[in-house]
Structure formats: structure tokens, C-alpha cells
Image (cartoon, rainbow, N blue to C red):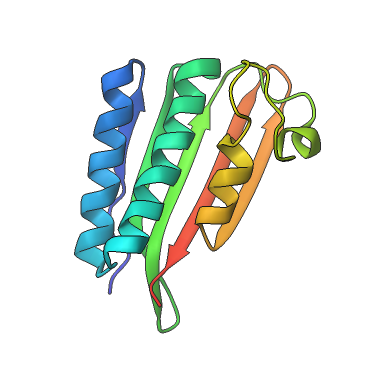
Length: 135
């Protein structure tokens, strides 16, 4: 599988969250993911896009099929230029919330995927990269 061109979904309003989820689900389906992992990928994308919408819009969700050796999967990069996350370690703790929600967003997303990376700089923004591999 050659390196695929990424699909870029700008996140500015709530409909963009739905579009990112649909685009990612279709890309994962085309990559061969089954129903359970399709749901995991779609949920992770939805969580990441909602974080951009709630805290740091505008931003983007970049979706692409990836290959590492014989492994195939999907990569999602959520990027914004918002206020950043003051304490990433705290934000990754179950139950942490700044919006009064359940606090399941980033920690929950981490559990849905195989690889999770986050880089956040105050007043510069946040980039979350996740990968899900075919089993």
C-alpha cells in the first residue's frame, strides 16, 4: 500500500465533527477494519474533533491510511492553534474536565487506539496523533 494522500477536514462548527467522523469511518472501512474497530476509530475521531470545537476552533482533523512494514492502519492527526493544554498529564487523567463533562475525552480516546501522542504548547495549540492498526 503506497502512502495515501491525507483527507483534511476543517473543524469550525458541529457539522464538521460529523463529517470528520464519517470520512474517518469510511477510510477505516476501505482499509479493512471490522465493525468493532470501525466504531472505535469513529468514536476517537469524534472525541478529538469535539475537543477542537469546544476549546480551540478552528482546527483540522487529518485522516490517512498508513503502513509500517507489513502492518496497515489509519492515522488521525487533530491539530489546532488554540490556547493549549496547561497540564497534559492532568488532562490525561480519567475524570479530568474543564467543561463540566464526564472527563472521558482524551483518556477515553487513548484507550480506543493503539498509539496515542499529544503535544501541547500554551498559546500555540495542541496536536494529537493517534493510530489504529488492523489486527
